[in-house]
Length: 64
Image (cartoon, rainbow, N blue to C red; front, side):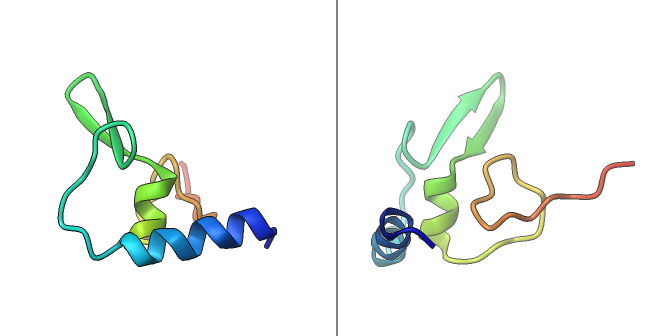
């Protein structure tokens, strides 16, 4: 893991205690959907295994 990536991961984990999402940082709107950013996933601190578009953990959902 690069130094910058490790730093961002540590900062995100420290901020995971916040109970609110900031549009443009944690998510953005795409039509009627909220799309979570990689930053949001890092703040959460774990992979949900749903194949999210911006998954920083590298999980890819199998496609048929």
